[in-house]
Amino acid sequence: MATTYRALALLLRYPTHEVQAAARDAAAIIEAEGLVPAPIRRALARLAAGLAADDLYDLQERYVWLFDRTRSLSLNLYEHVHGESRERGPAMVGLKELYTHHGLVLAATELPDHLPVFLEFLSVLPAAEAASLLGEASHVIAALGERLHKRQSPYRAVFGALSALADDPADAEALAALLREPDDDPDDLAALDRLWGETAVRFGPAEMGCPKAEALVAAINPPANAA
Image (spheres, rainbow, N blue to C red):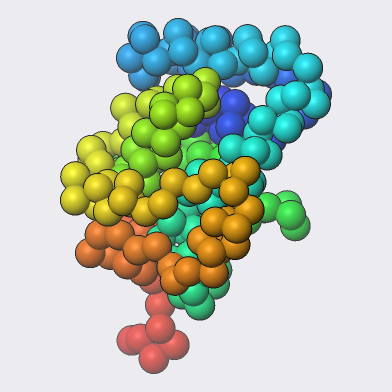
Protein backbone atom coordinates (compact mmCIF):
# COMPACT_ATOMS: atom_id res chain seq x y z
CA MET A 1 0.00 0.00 0.00
CA ALA A 2 1.32 3.45 -0.93
CA THR A 3 0.33 6.63 0.88
CA THR A 4 1.60 8.49 -2.19
CA TYR A 5 -1.72 7.78 -3.94
CA ARG A 6 -3.65 9.38 -1.10
CA ALA A 7 -1.33 12.37 -1.07
CA LEU A 8 -1.79 12.85 -4.83
CA ALA A 9 -5.56 12.58 -4.36
CA LEU A 10 -5.45 15.43 -1.85
CA LEU A 11 -3.42 17.66 -4.15
CA LEU A 12 -5.95 17.04 -6.92
CA ARG A 13 -9.05 17.78 -4.86
CA TYR A 14 -11.11 20.96 -5.03
CA PRO A 15 -9.19 23.53 -2.96
CA THR A 16 -10.54 24.08 0.56
CA HIS A 17 -9.01 25.32 3.80
CA GLU A 18 -8.42 21.66 4.70
CA VAL A 19 -6.58 21.03 1.43
CA GLN A 20 -4.47 24.13 1.98
CA ALA A 21 -3.56 23.03 5.49
CA ALA A 22 -2.50 19.54 4.37
CA ALA A 23 -0.88 20.31 1.00
CA ARG A 24 2.72 20.60 2.21
CA ASP A 25 2.35 17.47 4.32
CA ALA A 26 1.12 15.61 1.23
CA ALA A 27 4.20 16.70 -0.71
CA ALA A 28 6.40 15.62 2.21
CA ILE A 29 4.82 12.14 2.17
CA ILE A 30 5.47 11.83 -1.56
CA GLU A 31 9.07 12.92 -1.04
CA ALA A 32 9.58 10.46 1.80
CA GLU A 33 8.18 7.46 -0.08
CA GLY A 34 10.22 8.29 -3.17
CA LEU A 35 8.01 6.35 -5.58
CA VAL A 36 8.10 9.00 -8.33
CA PRO A 37 11.16 10.58 -9.95
CA ALA A 38 12.86 13.45 -8.16
CA PRO A 39 12.03 16.13 -10.79
CA ILE A 40 8.34 15.29 -10.44
CA ARG A 41 8.59 15.37 -6.64
CA ARG A 42 10.04 18.87 -6.88
CA ALA A 43 7.20 19.95 -9.18
CA LEU A 44 4.68 18.48 -6.73
CA ALA A 45 6.32 20.43 -3.90
CA ARG A 46 5.84 23.64 -5.91
CA LEU A 47 2.19 22.74 -6.53
CA ALA A 48 1.71 22.09 -2.80
CA ALA A 49 3.38 25.38 -1.88
CA GLY A 50 1.04 27.24 -4.21
CA LEU A 51 -2.00 25.48 -2.81
CA ALA A 52 -0.91 26.31 0.72
CA ALA A 53 -0.05 29.97 0.13
CA ASP A 54 -2.31 31.33 -2.63
CA ASP A 55 -5.65 33.01 -2.06
CA LEU A 56 -8.28 30.31 -1.63
CA TYR A 57 -10.84 31.95 -3.88
CA ASP A 58 -8.28 32.32 -6.66
CA LEU A 59 -7.35 28.66 -6.29
CA GLN A 60 -10.99 27.61 -6.45
CA GLU A 61 -11.65 29.75 -9.52
CA ARG A 62 -8.66 28.30 -11.38
CA TYR A 63 -9.65 24.77 -10.39
CA VAL A 64 -13.23 25.17 -11.66
CA TRP A 65 -11.95 26.78 -14.86
CA LEU A 66 -9.67 23.83 -15.52
CA PHE A 67 -11.52 20.75 -14.39
CA ASP A 68 -15.21 21.65 -14.20
CA ARG A 69 -15.70 23.92 -17.20
CA THR A 70 -13.35 22.06 -19.55
CA ARG A 71 -14.70 18.69 -20.67
CA SER A 72 -11.38 17.58 -22.10
CA LEU A 73 -9.87 17.99 -18.61
CA SER A 74 -12.66 16.30 -16.69
CA LEU A 75 -11.40 14.40 -13.65
CA ASN A 76 -14.23 11.88 -14.07
CA LEU A 77 -12.41 9.04 -15.82
CA TYR A 78 -15.45 7.47 -17.47
CA GLU A 79 -16.20 10.82 -19.09
CA HIS A 80 -13.29 10.02 -21.38
CA VAL A 81 -14.44 6.43 -21.88
CA HIS A 82 -18.23 6.51 -22.09
CA GLY A 83 -19.06 10.22 -22.23
CA GLU A 84 -22.74 10.59 -21.38
CA SER A 85 -23.73 7.26 -22.94
CA ARG A 86 -25.81 4.72 -21.06
CA GLU A 87 -22.82 2.42 -20.58
CA ARG A 88 -21.43 4.81 -17.99
CA GLY A 89 -24.09 3.98 -15.38
CA PRO A 90 -23.38 0.24 -15.09
CA ALA A 91 -19.63 0.93 -15.17
CA MET A 92 -20.01 3.36 -12.25
CA VAL A 93 -22.08 0.84 -10.29
CA GLY A 94 -19.47 -1.86 -10.84
CA LEU A 95 -16.66 0.43 -9.72
CA LYS A 96 -18.57 1.45 -6.60
CA GLU A 97 -19.13 -2.23 -5.73
CA LEU A 98 -15.42 -2.84 -6.13
CA TYR A 99 -14.70 -0.01 -3.69
CA THR A 100 -17.22 -1.34 -1.18
CA HIS A 101 -15.67 -4.81 -1.36
CA HIS A 102 -12.35 -3.27 -0.28
CA GLY A 103 -13.93 -1.23 2.51
CA LEU A 104 -14.02 2.18 0.81
CA VAL A 105 -17.39 3.87 1.40
CA LEU A 106 -18.13 6.92 -0.75
CA ALA A 107 -19.82 10.06 0.44
CA ALA A 108 -23.19 10.76 -1.14
CA THR A 109 -21.71 13.52 -3.32
CA GLU A 110 -18.71 11.51 -4.62
CA LEU A 111 -18.66 9.84 -8.03
CA PRO A 112 -16.71 6.56 -8.14
CA ASP A 113 -14.90 7.49 -11.36
CA HIS A 114 -13.68 10.83 -9.99
CA LEU A 115 -9.90 10.61 -10.16
CA PRO A 116 -9.16 11.69 -6.55
CA VAL A 117 -11.64 9.04 -5.35
CA PHE A 118 -9.97 6.40 -7.55
CA LEU A 119 -6.58 7.35 -6.09
CA GLU A 120 -7.92 6.96 -2.56
CA PHE A 121 -8.98 3.46 -3.56
CA LEU A 122 -5.57 2.64 -5.02
CA SER A 123 -3.95 3.69 -1.74
CA VAL A 124 -5.55 0.71 0.09
CA LEU A 125 -4.42 -1.89 -2.47
CA PRO A 126 -1.14 -3.79 -2.65
CA ALA A 127 1.37 -1.82 -4.69
CA ALA A 128 1.41 -4.17 -7.69
CA GLU A 129 -2.38 -4.28 -7.94
CA ALA A 130 -2.65 -0.50 -7.65
CA ALA A 131 -0.05 0.03 -10.39
CA SER A 132 -1.85 -2.47 -12.62
CA LEU A 133 -5.26 -0.81 -12.26
CA LEU A 134 -3.73 2.63 -12.78
CA GLY A 135 -2.07 1.30 -15.92
CA GLU A 136 -5.52 0.59 -17.39
CA ALA A 137 -6.14 4.34 -17.43
CA SER A 138 -2.62 5.40 -18.41
CA HIS A 139 -3.67 6.85 -21.78
CA VAL A 140 -6.35 9.02 -20.12
CA ILE A 141 -3.81 10.12 -17.50
CA ALA A 142 -1.26 10.95 -20.19
CA ALA A 143 -3.78 12.92 -22.26
CA LEU A 144 -4.83 14.99 -19.25
CA GLY A 145 -1.20 15.61 -18.38
CA GLU A 146 -0.40 16.73 -21.92
CA ARG A 147 -3.31 19.17 -21.96
CA LEU A 148 -2.35 20.60 -18.59
CA HIS A 149 1.25 20.93 -19.80
CA LYS A 150 0.04 23.03 -22.75
CA ARG A 151 -1.73 25.30 -20.25
CA GLN A 152 1.42 25.43 -18.07
CA SER A 153 -0.71 24.35 -15.12
CA PRO A 154 1.15 23.19 -11.99
CA TYR A 155 -1.42 20.37 -11.73
CA ARG A 156 0.42 18.63 -14.57
CA ALA A 157 2.88 17.36 -11.95
CA VAL A 158 0.19 15.10 -10.48
CA PHE A 159 -0.33 13.43 -13.85
CA GLY A 160 3.40 13.05 -14.38
CA ALA A 161 3.53 11.25 -11.04
CA LEU A 162 0.63 8.98 -11.98
CA SER A 163 2.23 8.09 -15.32
CA ALA A 164 5.38 7.14 -13.43
CA LEU A 165 3.42 4.97 -10.97
CA ALA A 166 1.41 3.05 -13.60
CA ASP A 167 2.80 -0.33 -14.56
CA ASP A 168 1.88 0.10 -18.24
CA PRO A 169 2.82 3.11 -20.36
CA ALA A 170 0.13 4.90 -22.31
CA ASP A 171 -0.85 3.06 -25.48
CA ALA A 172 0.35 5.34 -28.29
CA GLU A 173 -2.68 4.77 -30.53
CA ALA A 174 -5.19 5.25 -27.72
CA LEU A 175 -3.40 8.38 -26.51
CA ALA A 176 -3.31 9.84 -30.02
CA ALA A 177 -7.05 9.20 -30.39
CA LEU A 178 -7.77 11.10 -27.18
CA LEU A 179 -5.52 13.98 -28.14
CA ARG A 180 -7.31 14.29 -31.49
CA GLU A 181 -10.48 15.14 -29.59
CA PRO A 182 -11.17 18.90 -29.35
CA ASP A 183 -9.39 20.52 -26.42
CA ASP A 184 -12.19 22.89 -25.53
CA ASP A 185 -11.74 26.48 -24.45
CA PRO A 186 -13.94 27.37 -21.43
CA ASP A 187 -14.23 30.92 -22.79
CA ASP A 188 -15.93 29.65 -25.98
CA LEU A 189 -19.43 28.92 -24.70
CA ALA A 190 -20.83 28.02 -28.13
CA ALA A 191 -18.07 25.46 -28.69
CA LEU A 192 -18.69 24.01 -25.23
CA ASP A 193 -22.38 23.56 -26.04
CA ARG A 194 -21.45 21.66 -29.20
CA LEU A 195 -18.93 19.45 -27.37
CA TRP A 196 -21.33 18.47 -24.62
CA GLY A 197 -23.88 17.50 -27.26
CA GLU A 198 -21.55 15.18 -29.18
CA THR A 199 -21.35 11.38 -28.90
CA ALA A 200 -19.19 9.68 -26.30
CA VAL A 201 -15.41 9.71 -26.53
CA ARG A 202 -14.07 6.15 -26.77
CA PHE A 203 -10.58 4.74 -26.84
CA GLY A 204 -8.71 1.47 -27.06
CA PRO A 205 -10.03 -2.06 -27.47
CA ALA A 206 -11.77 -2.16 -24.08
CA GLU A 207 -14.53 0.37 -24.65
CA MET A 208 -16.48 -0.78 -21.64
CA GLY A 209 -13.90 0.54 -19.19
CA CYS A 210 -11.24 -1.16 -17.10
CA PRO A 211 -11.09 -4.92 -17.90
CA LYS A 212 -9.15 -5.80 -14.76
CA ALA A 213 -11.61 -3.94 -12.53
CA GLU A 214 -14.53 -5.57 -14.34
CA ALA A 215 -13.00 -9.00 -13.78
CA LEU A 216 -12.71 -8.24 -10.07
CA VAL A 217 -16.33 -7.11 -9.94
CA ALA A 218 -17.40 -10.31 -11.70
CA ALA A 219 -15.51 -12.36 -9.14
CA ILE A 220 -17.23 -10.51 -6.31
CA ASN A 221 -20.69 -10.82 -7.85
CA PRO A 222 -20.91 -14.09 -9.82
CA PRO A 223 -23.99 -14.68 -12.01
CA ALA A 224 -27.02 -16.01 -10.16
CA ASN A 225 -26.98 -19.25 -12.20
CA ALA A 226 -23.30 -19.94 -11.56
CA ALA A 227 -22.53 -23.30 -9.99
